[in-house]
Length: 298
Image (cartoon, rainbow, N blue to C red; front, side):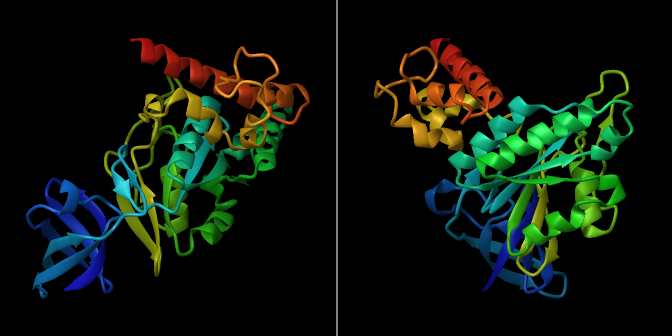
């Protein structure tokens, strides 16, 4: 028996890395709690044909975490890639993804990509927006990296953060996830996202989770992204806890069940008025809260 990690799967066939070899494995029978193997799972395999690298998965070890969409396990961190241009920054999606990472206790890292496109603009509006976004999230406590993936700028900073982690890349299609992964690996290993010149939105090219090994105990994942994450899975009254800069002010609300939307003497609203919480982040919190509340009524 050998211990390994699932790199990918298509149908019932799993690619498992074990002792520096990759085996094609099937899953044997049912596993505890009726779970199915996914990329990132640590597993026990039995080698059935070492010469042809064939094996069987006998056991799935306990997971640190599990993501339903896209299906994968044991993530250490998620690098949330935001394109500064083509497509334009989608900060509501970014905040939704940060909330998702916080619920699973996975470290979010924010990557502001395509900054080279801002430098080509005649005015400084784009660079001012970049500075503002960078400042908001860095002041909260998140790691923020600025990159030009196509020019290999900022890639080494990301590479330093990858060591001894399983890291997923997430963001809208076309933001540069695949380009970043190619730059990190030094080869064109993923299909690059294509930008539609008609609507300036990305065309989705990645259809399954696949882990790539950077070095020992260090993997990155190309995924279909987390835009399908259903915020309705979070109770509306818990949402504020996943905006981490809100946490110090929640207990300062007059009402124990404060929604932080309409109530008076709200600790979070007071902090916004005092400039201690970003107005833009608070407004996106209100939007997400409203969407959860509306879906509860349906």
